[in-house]
Image (cartoon, rainbow over all chains, first blue to last red; front, side, top):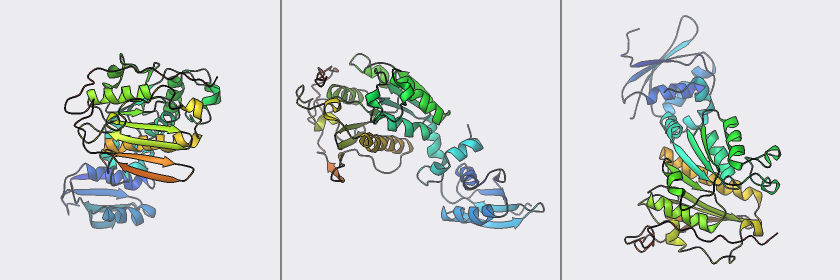
Length: 81
Length: 268
């Protein structure tokens, strides 16, 4: 999975809306402009909403793929300081 | 220290806000706010600041909870009658949010203790009900270079303004000195609609939160007034010139704190 140079990884499968987005947002706040965050998230509401909410905050969604265990892997690039 | 999942959930509606975020929430957690007066204004302010996760909240009040307080001082309950207000307030705030440290000061503010009370705090809320205390708090905050929120409520009216050192007029720039004793009734004599404390005290909490997270514009240089009977708000621009103020001006004549005489309550 060395397709991107991942700066940090966060697992948001242990929380539900809206903390899914909050946890992803908090992880992004720790990063610098251009850094890449890998997010592990559940199917359903998180997959529908988290990428969209992160885009609305101005970040770049690079890739979303399904993992073997049914969870998803979302790659986001931080935009802004 | 990173937030726990439980804290992320508790503060999620803050953290989601672009103007707050995790950084703002951390600033709140590290902030220290002093509320002077655990009454009509201080009660709602204390509830919201505790709920918001302000890490350290000091609360100053010399009184005990009285039955006549409960119509508006929503931090106290019927079972708290007779208890020091600071104690009752602390219990309610800790019940709302165990993340918060509440320091209690069971005393009146005086020229002797006010500088010591405010010195460790980042922002002060004046929730007192009398002019001597309001001038004392203003002068002390100017001298100690502390930002504070002034507010007052009576009958169906309320007002507030925010002072930040170097960013506009202080309370004394606007109201030179306390009115003559008994020229103005206290809210004991005049009455006050309970929800007015909720309206104006909540706005004081709002100013404190905005100051801490650095969001938006504060009420510096403005007096915001509210008339509930007419449902009218006025945002009055205050004179920008503070040079001649007796306490925050270029050549202050008030260099020591003053304990003005308190108006006697004549309604009983």
